[in-house]
Length: 425
Figure 1 (cartoon, helix red, strand yellow):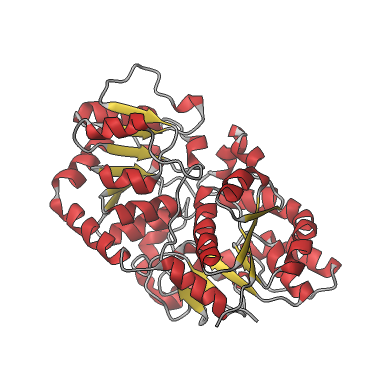
Figure 2: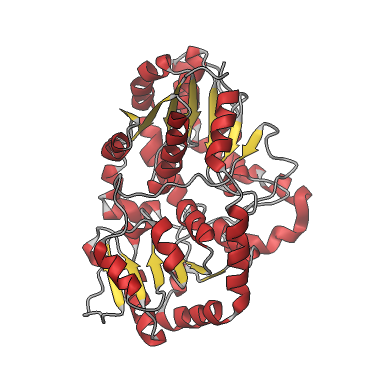
């Protein structure tokens, strides 16, 4: 029998980083546990609206999401990850530690997102167990299954060189990441803790256990993965506000005609959309298909011209309710959006912006469910051509149906909760 425990889940980023933690948090609560999610203040209402505990921890990403220039820096294909780590999270490390420490004292188990750098430090100071969670295969840096790197598509042609080459090649990103993580070791020394070789990459994994909240279909287990890594599948949750689903207006649009093509940039790339929605609307017109544009809160994403009745514009809609009613999905390739599109069983087009998105696009392409358009080439004529391919070539729909059926057999929330319970003291 598992006694009721207090789980503290720390996460940062976009909704794609928050929603899986809410999903698992709700699962833990149903099993009788107390759950507190420690994250940016901007998500308080969402977390508390689901009846979970909330604890604010720096940085609050609200300033990032509301600053268009910052979002451009954050989604630069080559330097976006560096900017987020070195300019957003590293300066907030000491404050995050001070804010997290009182809550961590009460916890029976800490669960950490890869950029929640204060969590393993607090666990070490308090002699607490902690579990590391990754949401994307790209974080594993496997020499047997190397990731596609944002801003360096030429590296994909080197994949056939094999694990010996990649093992030595990865010394380069590890050296770079170690430099980025220097403030972590500096703070550890202030606390009287020993330095670690690579706090961002290798040392983000926990000796107490690690979880991968993605499907084994996207990344089969490799020999150089951490031995104590549990692959659970995708934990799904996607309500914008607790209890709210598709609006009546969108429901009427969906019921009024053929399945539309859905165009979305998730919850973060949408703040640096560029011409995505303008070109998407033009492509839908040229193709003569119905479309749904999920444009977010940035008014610049609204197409300047009056749209026909065949194109519906909304700020957001729950993907789990919308994607299954679509003919195809065009999206940026974030982990949360990708998971929902795979579960919906619909063919898709990736338009990767940065971070893990090119790697997710490649893996979905290998499953036969998707094609990719580079962001700088996203123009209506090419979008029309690629949409015609995935809509008329039945192999894409067949593959998408097969993948969705396999995903439906994965009970990710139950697997994650059971593994977390097993890690309790």
